[in-house]
Amino acid sequence: MPRIGTGIHRRMSLARDSLARDVTTVGSATLLSRLLAFARDMGIAAALGAGVFADAYFAALQIPNLFRRLLAEGALNSAFVPAWLRIRDDGGPEAARRFAAGAFVTLAAALLVVALAAALFAPTVVRLLAPGFDPAGERFQWAVVFVRLGIPYIVLAGMVAVVASVLNASGRVAAAAFGNVVFNIVLVTAVVFVVVRQDGLPITAGAFLSLAVVAAGIAQLVVVGGALLRSAERPGRPAPSADIVPFLRQALPGVVAAGIPQLTLMAGAMVASSSPAAVAWLYYANRLYELPLGVVSIVVASVMAPMIAAHLRTGAGDDVAVAQSRALEIAVGLALPSAVAFVILAVPIAGGLFQRGAFSAHDTAMVAAALAAMSAGLPGHVIEKVFAAVSFAHEDTRTPMTTALCGLAAAAFGALALFPAYGHVGVAAAIAGSGWVGAALLGAILMRRRWLAFDRLARRRLPLLLGAAALMGGAILFGHGALGGWFDITGSSLARLSSLAVLVIGGLAVYVTALQVLGVVSVAGILASLRGRP
Image (tube, rainbow, N blue to C red; front, side, top):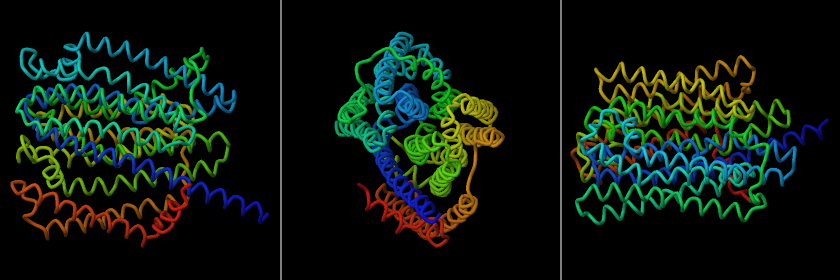
């Protein structure tokens, strides 16, 4: 009996160490990728501001962003991994390789057809994306051009998604995660080129940046594809596989569900498109909001979902509950402090990151208002991601799609109701509410099915996470008041950025210290597990 207990504790310890390493690897790569994306957006703000060409560019960018969210950022991964694991266990490695090759070719061919259709009917696409754009106006005409220049990316997004999913399923999470870093390095390089030129032609800048998205997709495919070709799981020649059609049928609802946040933003942009600059303001606010949401989404899809699926296949009920509990704690532990900081520091964040060049102090105030409203929904959106991962592990992709569509409907009706009185801020508030609607509905369904289980440790830690976030919020409020005029939106960019860095680092230190004191995490234990990385 003692030997059995010792073995169980050993396996749990090894699992925690592996989880810490994988979460830290994927989280660090995703955070670096998002920071690079901020550098890109800062350059775009300086080059395009929030005017006609910014509205046109951001309206067109919604198509690449949608497919990146649907495919390349882990949405397909959540459906692919359980299927790949099942096929490998039942049919062996060769069956898994045939399945991966078939999925790669099938998805690439389907997306090529979609890309060609979107390029051909680009004016119709823009009418759907931005019904408030005047068809005879500059915003509409240039949005059509930008759609056609960037549309080839969607084929690359599908190819990257399949390759990254195979890497994640086989435990090679680092290679897949750092592919996103390469993607944004290419885009940052393009933005730097545009800003340095300073030729005063936003038309040229918008066209160049649209093409840069395609170049970045090619670079990402080279990185992740090279990693897969060097691994034992590299796909062979494409061959007919009976598993492809069932997989695509199973994956489609899950992919749609994971893309709902981007669809929600698109719906909000449609409602706000009649208001000048509102599309750009919502885009900039959403880019800030996407930092924590993107990190959590990719961590859950790349690390948590495979872990939950693997435990579910072994039939270890206690391990499944532990995996779900840790996933929820990590998601909430990242989301709560981010939401608190965004609400308190909305103006300093928006001003420090974007206010320069063509981006004015008025634009800062408008983006900050949208960010503060949107941030109220951040915990709801990340909890929904965890619940969706649990459903995907059971190979049920329809339920998350249905509940997410309910959230999308709530956002659309909320935006239509709030926009006349509150403008783009009302749209942002409706987007925030959609996450809580989706999370509540999906959580209730999973509880009824007895698929959702959390251990005692999670029930103790979750309130402590809330308390630690509240302490951090108090510290940031105190620091904000002490620094005072350093955050004046008419002040220098260096002063705003420096003060913002002080508050962010200080708030993070307070939060981590509170977690340590309250016994939620052991910083020493996490560092020890990272030093033990193979």
